[in-house]
Length: 86
Image (cartoon, rainbow, N blue to C red; front, side):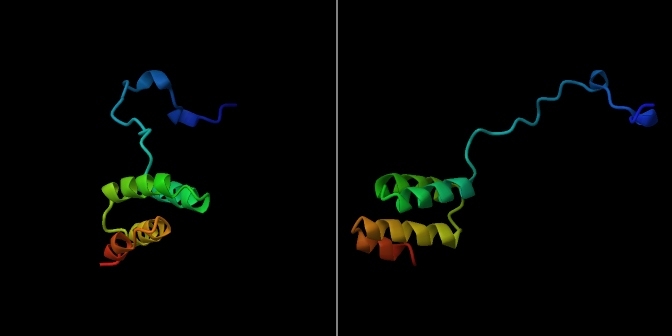
């Protein structure tokens, strides 16, 4: 008895379609989370790099701007930190 029924799947029936290839590039949420984890590990300079990468993907995400402000404040860069809230 076969579970495939009359519509069984065969790899030979399909063309080689390479149009979808998952990207190795991190998603903005992953970059944001990585930045926050670096900040929590007191690695503020690396955190700033990652949060800037996240903002390059989506500069409208208020959470990333908030995180950037907090990271900048930890680096004693208060004026830049305030600009993140504008």
